[in-house]
Length: 129
Image 1 (cartoon, rainbow, N blue to C red):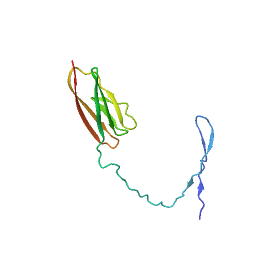
Image 2: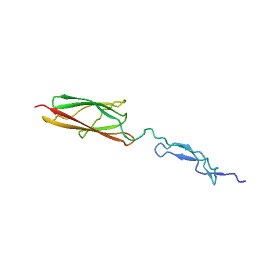
Image 3: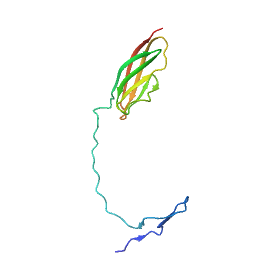
Image 4: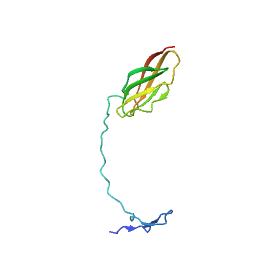
């Protein structure tokens, strides 16, 4: 049986530092045995893709509204078209809307979790004159 031949390109020169490195030899015409096929099972972590989204309280602060609630860790939230940048690791959030005009308003909270599940909550608030 013939011994595999080493490739002649055993060294590499770094173009920036001009340092010469020795490579591992590659053998021409060598082969290996076929490896065993990997077997695995995918298990869903949730029963569905629905996400947790709870609005715990709304508080009027001047003409803005403070909204506090809880969602899943790692979820993304948008409140009245504004992204919520500060969601805690446990999923709690606190967000202030932009100032609202006096009257009745519906605040819309939309969320999406890592699995693609979405949820939408609405709450009505009245800003006094």
